[in-house]
Length: 115
Length: 107
Image (cartoon, rainbow over the protein chains, first blue to last red):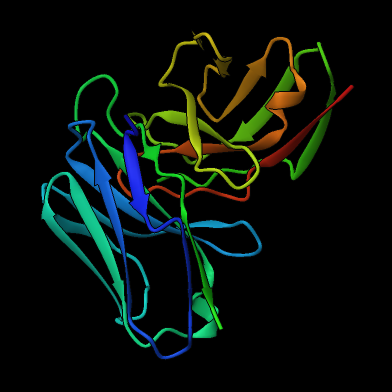
C-alpha cells in the first residue's frame, strides 16, 4: 500500500482553467503539507494542516486553496491557472508528536503543466 | 526553523564513504536535524534524524557536532543508486528545504 498517494500524477491544462490535486495518507499522521518544486528544483512549502486546521500558509496566491476534509486527506484546488504554476507539487505527512515527530513522508508528486 | 547551508554539489567514488556536511548555526536547543534525499524527480525520502547524539540506521550515519551548529551525513559505502539531491532540514513545524547537495556517485 502506498503511504502517501497523490492523484493525478500528471496534469496538463490550459491557462485560466481550475484544477484540483488530491492527497491521501494511510499512515495515521495528523499533519499534512503541500510543497511546490519548480524547474530550479527548489522545494518550497506552501501549506500545512494539523488535525484539519491550517497552521502554515506561506506567501501563496489566493488562487491556491487547500482543503482538508479529514486528517487523512489534504486536497489542493487551483483557480485560474497561470503559466508560472507549472511545477511539481508534492504532498507530505508527519506526526506532530512522539519520537518520530516531524519526519515527513512524501508522495510521488503531481507534475502540472500549464499551456 | 533554522537556516541550513550545504555545498551545492559533491562527487564520490562508488564503494567509498560519502560525507555530506550541513551548517545549521542558528539551530535552537530543541530542534532536530533531519536528512532527506530526492532521487531524480521522485518525492523526497527520509534518511535519518538526530538531536544531539550521533545516530546510525540501515541507510546512513549522522554525526552532530557538540555545539550542534553543524552535522555530517555519512553514506558508508556509496553506490550508484545513492546519486541524488540530499537535503538537511533543521527545526520543526515550518519545514524549510534549502537547495540541498547534489551527490554524484561515480563508477
